[in-house]
Length: 419
Length: 173
Image (cartoon, rainbow over the protein chains, first blue to last red):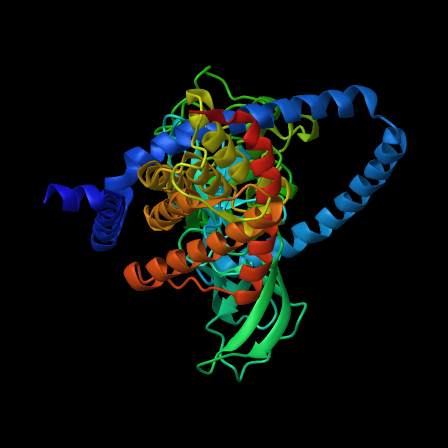
């Protein structure tokens, strides 16, 4: 027996080590998720490698910053001039887009659509990869401490990148599964034809759109957007362009996509840590200005009710305020500066939409665009809150009423009123 | 020097210092994870941890040391990816065992022999990896022969350079 063990010692050792690994694989396959069983050893491996990656990225960025910010400034003036011109063009474009977006929001409101906004993003630096073409993942330098959680969407300004797969606390890094990985799946929609499909990676790193029936017409060059159906990516984010369409197996088209984001050269990404979903412009419904209100505003003023009227509560300072003060005061603590200039119906829509547009185009830094809060309006005071500089000397119209004033309390007769 | 059949007494057995034993595989893992950020094709064609496994296994000429080296490097490589842990581990365990067993029988010192050995072990590694992935894990990963040939050649050529560099750390027992 001893001679047998001695003779086949190496082979027995090999079989033993292989058996243990196969057993480990079987456990992972059986549990379906390797999170519970393998998390700790993954942390060890990531902890051993990522500090080097962080250091190299830090040194590279430092050297690059010094070079680009202090030495290599050739052509900066010309570039600055070009960028200024581009900003002008973009401003003009933004005005036009704002109009379109306002119209779209009105339609969404009519249809009671729910909107989803990107309300908070965290920028992160790409510090590593899996190093294997069989596992297309990247590591980012933000983890649990920065609010990153599994299944959060990862994007760049160009388009979507992937989703957070695992989050580590120590070291504070996260693993991101790229959309080009075979195991990834993203709900996508073709921009023009509105056909929906599932975006998947292939073994050679390409991205395809699956589940589009072969009798549909899809043209190369068409833009692909996220459909929002996967509950990870908000709807409407750019995914890529259709590069090739061919008939695939099982009655489905084989559509190849060129990702909008350059997945092979990622340096900085944004993690969508917070999304908001709300009814389209639901809060604007109560701020409609009635024709009577507009008429009342344009007509000569109607004096306010005397403070001594029954049921009326005097203003906090005991006197009616002039218009200039009313626009800056906050009945119910609600009238914010953002509302002051945009309290018109259309203006409010635009303001709200403007916020939404900013949210949909995530800035490089973590931001949260506040939604303007509307003042509570009592009947008879539903007037536009003008900025102080534009306020007309119509104290009776623009005077502030306490919020708890009876909504239909009749104003006292005004001798100047045409009524 | 061509590949020569030698007896167990004739082959040189080498050992490595602890910093080299730990640092070189770690460096290989780091480079394998970092270089694809700048050169995406690197991950497609190069498997540095495999080259390190082959080198250490052949230099030590001990099957147990070789398979353990392969198992540890392979498992570490698995941990950096998102697939099940053990796919690379099993493949590199077998490669480590095979390389060290081959090292006992053959004295592989010249560039041509090293290229051929690396090419052969690359195919063995790919075969085991995809077999395990497909039949044990039920993964959909597919193998391309053209890609396999190219990657085998690239790894073989790079292996010759890497082995030449690592030869400097060899210590005679």
